[in-house]
Image (cartoon, rainbow, N blue to C red; front, side, top):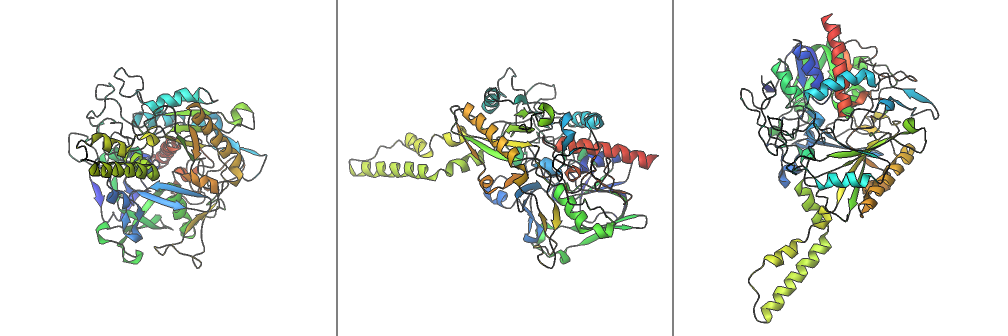
Length: 577
């Protein structure tokens, strides 16, 4: 078992592009059955302890190779929304908040995004995905935080606040199912306990008899990379198992061109060399792999971009390519000045949620299906929040300086400064009594991803620029309902509510972009079918968030992984028949 950097092989049975929730699951399933699998990941590997925490490290932890940046966060800004996705071995699992919720059984039915008054149904339903949900949950050892464990270590103030405040809303409270290890080898709740291997070596520690992982230490750092290895991200799980089964996994290897040829596909990659600094595309080493089959799983933005840029070379004729783009209803809000300490820096980022019914559940058009989740954050974010209150801090500093000067000129200062310094730092109530809220649900998937005219504008890497037509305009009722429900929670905590400031400019930030290579629905043919097969291009499949023909509603990671597991079943049946 080895993690590879450098030139990939010349041939492979199956090339999997991307190592997120689609690619990792497919790679493990195919490799376990003996197929020759090559996984291509553009980003780096991040073993426990390697996620940066210093200002210098965090400042360089972004993805833009043309600027010499080979970090984890890939930030996009489109006309109506901004998006943050991940680059690295494990894809979005490196920065997501671990929530593995199933798509609601009734939410596979949705209003048609382009034809008002028309309802449509996804080509797969809950029953189609149920066995795959089961399989993924078991593989990732999904757990809920042991909130009521006798030790009290996991009895988090923010979780209790969500439970108490939620009682005043129409939402249903529950602890979130998480891909986080809270229990030790004996199955007992434990903070920071060593974890054993999961039946296969860890890809970051080949040959080691230990995993190098520990149970959750409640640091609130899930979204900036878990240095404890408590998070069951895909590098520790599916990709480690895939490598154990013989899959070749290449990092810093980005697919640039994809073409259909006799006998399969030519996959042309650029090999990134971070130590070489910024380099034009033409100067980066390239290599071409001949693959019998290709699974595109580069994430919603990556897969849509790759297929749009190579649609002629692949022979993709579907007019649906690029359509049905949305942000899964993501909205960020804040509870500020609550009457009780919320301690957002303690715990996993998300520990619990409130679920609200949709109109398909209640038959009330005023209802919009959504989830609202508590959101923790690392300690450095709390310091930044406190520093944002600079007038108050400057006032405290001014009073301290004035006091010391007065004492100096009136007989000498007192020599014990502890209380003075404590007052200077301040009580920290702005961060301690505040809590971000993460909302997601059923927005309208009526956006289109497209490539701008290359004669008009090209990106810094001399490649076409990806853009989107999606705006909040057709989803205003949904977002207004979401904001009102968040405000209800703030009121119940005797705090005030503030929405993310970009929302006042009719912009949202999403970490869950979906669509662009949609499945068919009952009302319209899509780019792919219910098993991810690209119509008219034998041997090519797509398997990530881009295939969703609408919002998942809940956090989409589990549904993407379950869909990938279903795709793997169908692909294995095809290959091994």
